[in-house]
Length: 297
Image (cartoon, rainbow, N blue to C red; front, side, top):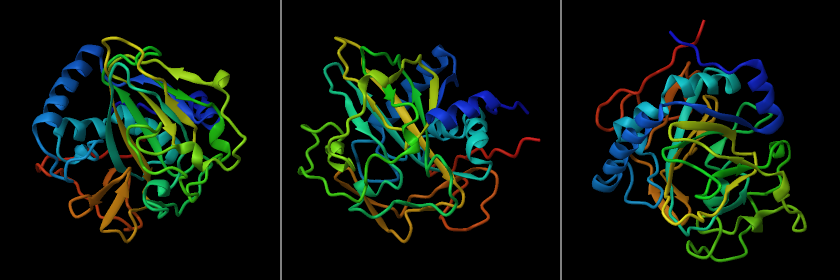
């Protein structure tokens, strides 16, 4: 069995900077072919998980290619190097950025309470120096400074500059805000503090490449200034198996939309669940198996 674990140098880089540099999951041609099929499913088949929503949340639960992608050993082994082998896949999302679309403003998240009426979507039971969630952001098309690539503030995960319990000053408005309906700057602990744009690191990526980062690392994206290049990407978010996911909730609110959690379940993608906090599944809603990664020797 191949081992895709991070090197000690990569692990040290993550702890210092809050992210792992882009790595290849698929060859360009394979990624483009996969995305064509995924995109067709997204636009032609309604979600079996939730009612229609802007972000195509958790389509790994009903699109087999996303099921395979989110459990890819090249991703899971790298994550295990940072959080240990016992981990859940919590959530997936799909992002598109069309020519002319604005950038996503700087933001930093831990419990995702900001979107759920200040109620944490996750409760951490095992402390870590990087927070609760590790995100894997995968580019399915070219991602460049021109068409809206991801950007980070290296090292910012060491301090929480935003408070998810603060109240947004502006009414939810998807079209006029910089963060999917919210103005995330409203949550700054210090209103006079501003991220330094000169410190930003830009994640230009080829189709099939992915980057890992903690959601505590301040991140955003640049506007799509191109005339004809649409950027497509997916997020997959992972937590330690000790984490409580949607604790005590039958519904969750996120970015102005309400989700019934009846058909939602987390996925143990590696190791063991020694806690039993969460509803889990081993197959998606099509009956297709999730791959489970055994511990490397």
